[in-house]
Amino acid sequence: MRRGLIASDRGAIPEVVGDAGLLADAEDADGFAHHLSKVLLSPDLATTLQNRGFRARHSFPRQRTAQQILDSYQRTVHPTEQPVFAHG
Image 1 (cartoon, rainbow, N blue to C red):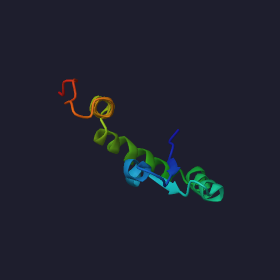
Image 2 (image 1 turned 180 degrees about the vertical axis):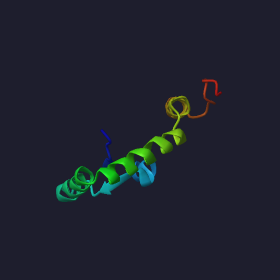
Image 3 (image 1 turned 90 degrees about the vertical axis):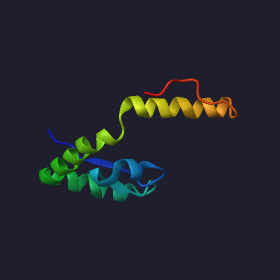
Image 4 (image 1 turned 135 degrees about the vertical axis):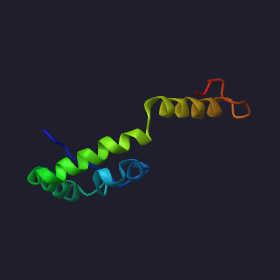
């Protein structure tokens, strides 16, 4: 079964979703319902969105994302020190 992504248009979510999903106002239940209907009633749209999502996932490798989160925590706890975690 193919699935399409429906997400909020707030914060960094649109940047992450890109063209791999449909965005709705976070406070607009009808907007989410409309997008859900579009995806459920159009298998071609769902397949297109899922394929785009699979391609886009390479932009956010787990190791790099985890390293960036750790570095961010490190800067928060010790703002004048360099991150202690090795990159690579």
